[in-house]
Length: 90
Ligand code: SF4
Ligand code: SF4
Image (cartoon, rainbow, N blue to C red; front, side, top):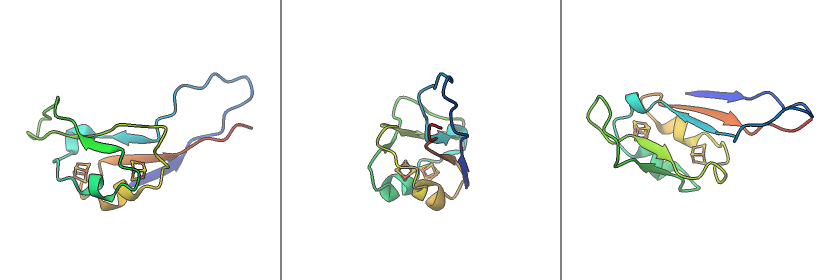
């Protein structure tokens, strides 16, 4: 599990859309543990993709609703997630 804090933005910095969760889809085995654990219900299996392991990997459906709680990362047995805290503007 990786939980990190992205650096705060400076006043003149152009922010890219914040992605609170990075998902290593190549390592996901589609077990669904993270989907059951997510309190915001923003994870699902991506039926449009089959990874090299032969599974539909998980994806984040709503970045704005994700709270960076990292429960998904805690339950994932394959260290698929990197979770980032939402940066604060300085
Ligand atoms: S960090 Fe929390 S809210 Fe965001 S996807 Fe993971 S479990 Fe869901
Ligand atoms: S818990 Fe990990 S391996 Fe299981 S579906 Fe979620 S990301 Fe994939």
